[in-house]
Amino acid sequence: MEGRMASDDERRAANRAVLRRAIAAIGTGDPAALAGLYTDDYVLELPYSDPPKRLEGMAEVMEHVAPQLGTFVFTLSLTDLHDCVDPDLLVAEYTSDGHVSTTGRPYRNTYIALWRFRDGRICGVREFSNPMIAAEALTPGDEQAHGHVTGRTGTVAGENR
Image (cartoon, rainbow, N blue to C red; front, side, top):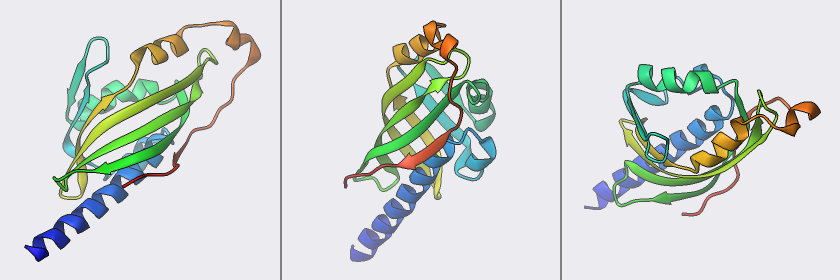
């Protein structure tokens, strides 16, 4: 039993490291930075999206995400990371802080997500965030007259066990 505990702890630690790398890479907006972190059959679920989405396979996920990579310019920060009994499941809380390049409007959202892992790679994420914040940021407003900042980074601000 002790050997299994050590094995579970090692898997959990490895999965936490992969999640941290993914959070940092997502903030770069560079799909190549994400290469190798996800399984080919990766599933992204966005239950609060309008309409709710379930994207299956990296090709479908990238088709959905790619147009947004140059539009949403943000820093993604991991604020809390919670272990589960299943070593291949983590609950992550994170925030985005940035803007939309086409409108100049701010984009700041809060997320909570279930991250699933298989063989050291991310095989699924069910992410909950407020879709109205994204919709408002995409709506043109007075901010366009003031220009906008460019740049995108990912950070790990902190975490709790």
